[in-house]
Length: 132
Image (cartoon, rainbow, N blue to C red):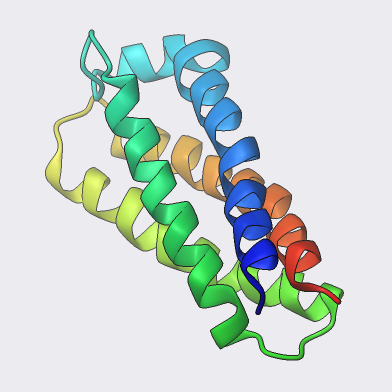
C-alpha cells in the first residue's frame, strides 16, 4: 500500500458517500424518513460528515489488510460483503433496535437498500484505488 493509494481509497469512499447520503436521506426519501419520525428536524450535517470521514479513513486502512493481492473484481466483492455487512451492523440494526420510529420494517428496508447502493458504488472504487 502506498500513501497515494490510501488517499485515493479515502476519496473513493468519501466522495460518493456524502452526496449519496445527503440526497438519499435529506432529499429523495426525505418524506419517507419524516413519516418514520426517526430523524431530528435540524439534522446536524457536519456530524454526519465527520462520521463519514472516520469511516473512510478506517475502511481505506482496512482494505489492503483484508484483501491483499486480490484482483479488482475479487476486492470489489470482498469489500462489498465485508464493509457492507459491517456497516449494516452499525447503521441499520442498532438504530432500528433502539430508536423510536413509526415503522421498523420501513426504516430497515430504506436503510438496507441505502447500504447496498452505497457499497455497490464505493467497493469497486476502493478496489480500483488499490489495484496496481
